[in-house]
Length: 392
Image (cartoon, rainbow, N blue to C red; front, side, top):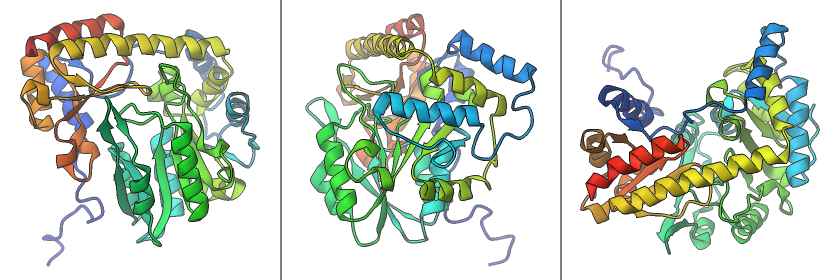
């Protein structure tokens, strides 16, 4: 094969094209549809946090390269947040790393911790960057599929245990879980922790929706469980909690050894990012508990608006106890192909959604499921619900 005949994209990434989010967002623009596909809010977060970013810009904070690990103010605020919310104690100087959003944190962690051929057990369906990051690191992904059971998606702990082999290096856990809206229970997380300790596995845990749990559900960081702090890389983000997704401020908390490893990869990705915004997020994390509770309650109300509309439109709607996504089944509407359904939905109803099949290795398993985002203004959700009713 000559160089001109060789594919330009390397084989590790050959299966990944343009993301479905780009395709569906472009479709929303071209058709004038309500975009309930990509998960970004249609309003900004707290005014005092935005003003903190403006102040940082004007005062010259972060306009040049910030420190590689992140500005001290933010690292201190992250450590204080983990202590206040969960009783987890981290050294801001050695055990906290600021990243360009959670997506970079995931990529850097996997690039740092995997050798080619290592297996990564991940909960399927999974956020699409997981598969790409595992591939870039030369790892092998092993999906454990969350399946519908009694109106919600559930983890089969026996299947999880069976997925671990001598080649397994780490578990990649996401709770609250995107796209299904599942929040793993204490019993489930305890079983995950016991498996990790027994098999001496590392765990990367994506907890970016930690403040978005509903109906009395509790977010339990895996690092709080026995034997887990020393083997868990916890990933958080400001975007989902404060509705500033464009700022791209995420973080990693873990042991000095694991943080150093992740930083070794991260420094050759973005090096540093989001300088002025880091100062603003430091102030955001110190907001009173009332902010977090009001935000959670408001998002739960929006969930209920959209869930009711989807039910009236004829979808089967699965319980969402976390995140800002609802997964639905389109088979009650006489449909079976989520891709075809989502591509036709803008013309049929003026609404954009995401086919869950893109989050599966075996796409047939996710074929009838479609995800809608409810992180929008209440009036937008009501209009979307009204448009979708014509499907029934």
